[in-house]
Image (cartoon, rainbow, N blue to C red; front, side, top):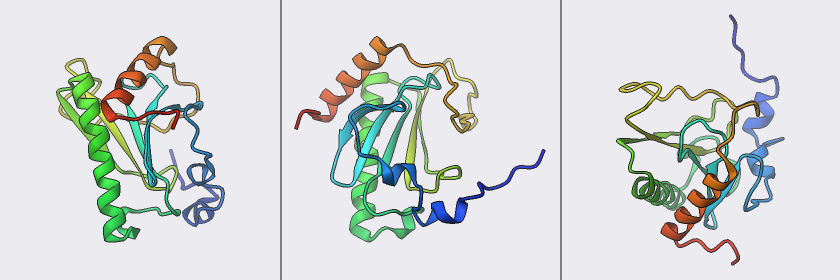
Length: 162
């Protein structure tokens, strides 16, 4: 089985056709519900029923692939936003452990996966078996997702009507 980088990898690394750069930063989309927004990041609670509380923190400044491309001040702001989102997830979901994955292997745009780990876990003691999403994943029931998003927004002090 041979795996290859996407054909448009070089363009994506420059931000050409980057879905995260092209986003209009909606409060809700096919991927999830935004639970926090700052000038430079969005935290998005994911709809895919991969792991309850699975959230992406997405860099919304200029296109960068790696955190090393950020200035000192940008990096400080980015990681602070990641930690703020993680603290709210921990407070709400009470996981045994929180995983922080900054990958960008399928979409080279800076973002961090926050993955709560629970007693009932698909890979206890090992990295979470996170696979690229293709849209066929089962979804968290909408009522549950909305309730979690509302609680997390309150914990994060985020008013989506501002």
